[in-house]
Amino acid sequence: MSMSRRFRESLNFPLVFVGIMWVIHLLKSVLDLNLVQFGVYPRVTQGIKGIFFSPLIHSDWHHLLSNSVPFVVLSVMIFFFYRRVAIRSYILIYILTGLAVWLFGRRVFHIGASGVVYGLLAFVFWSGIFRRSLKSIVLALIVTFLYSGYFLGVLPNQEGISWESHLLGALAGIFTAFWYKNEIEADEIPKKPSWADEEPDPPRYFLERDVFDRKRGEQEM
Image: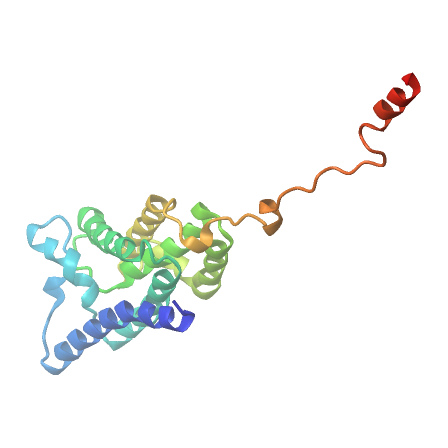
């Protein structure tokens, strides 16, 4: 498969998911809907539905945009470079983040895809730690450079921010990276150097090995 085709395929899922988020928010704005009740509300039965729906709901356009861009960038990274585990990793991060917020979060509605974004970010970074392939380490360095400021988002008591989603999403990403660390991609398999498969040359000697035996036989004759 060509790199351009692989890149296009890696865009499919992120763009569809973000498109759904934008359509929902557009309808919410045009129809003046209140969708907060579809967020995660911890330790209440009615709040369980937020595990599945909360990443699709955002408070305003700025909130939506700030989650959309990193979601697409990080998802494309995962779908391009970690194709074997991309779908499974995404589902695991998505469910674990929402479930953890429902179990441990504050008793408020938690909405937005930021928890999933933190999970994807942690997955890419910690895959570099756990896999230790050149590719995974480079990707970890790239996300550190691009999103180093995100690490402040896991600090508690930030007004108007679901820091629990950020922290628990990051932990879900770390767990997922560890869980799939041994399912390596084809380009992560160490390749033997070309000379390793070559037949070794036979040893060469300054004199023939049997020269002394032949000389001794000549003298006895």
